[in-house]
Amino acid sequence: MAIIDTRREQMFPSLKPEEIDRIRRFGDIAHAKAGAVLAKAGEVSPGVMIVLEGTARVTRRDAMDETHVIVEHGPGGFIGELAQLSGRPSLVDVHALTDLEVLRIKPDRLRAVLIAEAELGERIMRALILRRVGLLETGAGGPVIIGRAADGVVIRLSGFLSRNGHPYRHLDPDQVDCAKVLIERFSVDEAELPIVLCPGGQLLRHPSNAELARCIGMVGDLDPSRVYDVAVVGAGPAGLATAVYAASEGLSVLVLDTRAFGGQAGASARIENYLGFPTGVSGMALMARAYNQAQKFGANLAIPDEVASLDCEGDDGLSGYHLKLVSGETTQAKTVVIASGARYRRLEVSNLDEFEGSSVHYWASPLEAKLCAGQEVALVGAGNSAGQAAVYLASQVKKVWLVIRGKSLHASMSRYLIDRIESLPNIEVVVRNEIFELEGENGQLRAIRHRDLDTGEEDRCEISHLFLFIGAAPNTAWLSQCRVELDNHGFVRTGQDLAPGHPPLQTSRHGVFAIGDARAGSVKRVAAAVGEGAQVVAAIHAFLAEPVTGA
Image (tube, rainbow, N blue to C red; front, side, top):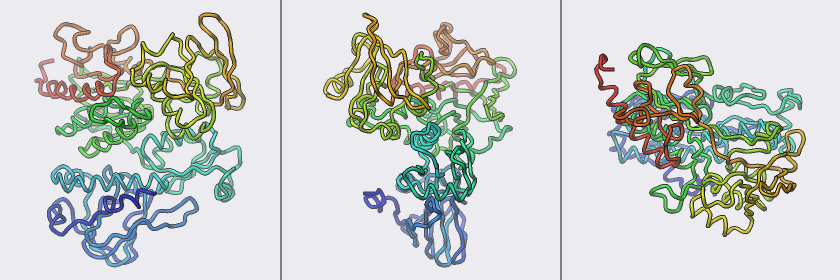
């Protein structure tokens, strides 16, 4: 059943008059005539609106622009979902059925409500989150991707939107008739697929993630004159923890990430050893909570916005830091937190790039699982991420061939995952082997060839999807202009690793800190990253409290 059927009361609670009176100071009164448009999908709405008198109708539009009613709000009902928390475009249409009087609360004041009125704020926040979940189920208000399911661009765009918690619809012209109708309506040639229709009516052909994000209002222009207290580069567990703790303590925070919130943790199918979750939690669910929490406290999350370089002004950061983005924009901050994690390592096979995005994958989400359901797949890797992916895929596919270079999994994988893998009959561990050749054409993998590292014996396995979890290299190349000191492997050196008594988590640059997987000597665990994200906020406060002449 849809979430609107199972949790309707929590999605659409009715506020009592006395509760509305408690939050009147956060908004202003507005009136609308019957038939007026209060919000339109693809356009920024004025914020959350609490109905005082009258009735409003919330609707969604499908790919063929037909309207479907979601809910009608009477007195005490409130209009809005997570988009209104950050001032992003509405995902639904809202009309006044009768003359209306509403209490309008803008995004910054809404965040103030959530903090000042804890119990009431919890109910409102829960409703906003559940409404987004409901929109994700239907794809309402998001872009429409038209292209074949196996197309690498379709997979990339779908994965990008899914990992950022943004609704969308995918229409395959080989399976859905209305996709063919839309292709004809927009006079699109087959060679131009895939295309994307944005809610505002724009048509994109083979867009990049950044182009799609700007078209749907996920990210806007940054004010180059604004100086943040802290700029966090990377929105994984470490970066999001910094954002939550720093913003909750009153610091102005900007978070930048090139792909999506959650980092590698966000791609984990199930994390079972994170404190407080005895039954486990998906990486996406855990990181989505952290992302919403950071927004609640007022952090500005610019995703996707990739940092090209860090420029250091003045002597040792006394004048602050400038970050140059790949888009050409610049932003400023008094301190910088390096939480950029690591980039996935690639298999050393000559034609690997031919299959990346369509048949070779670096994470195992429901999107990838759907592509290879009922098939045999190969997975390379022996760490916890590989183990979590193998266990998840085993529940979706016919068989998982787990290829590792070592003699066993015991040296690099948690015991609970090894036990799980050994108990699953459709996971076969192939030890002391490496893949040396990929076979296929037109971006579609047909088989892999692997070699025994001890005997040199070669074998061929017919599979169409290959998953790579072979570790990662530090994502620190963007630091070269600022001369932040790295170790021999490219990880950022901090604290005692630089000199006795050097401030914890601070790099060789005054006011620049490093946490999480990018930091030399860090423990590669979600809990450790979150801990460092919280710890670095104390170091930031100490730095900001220093006299200007004290550097």
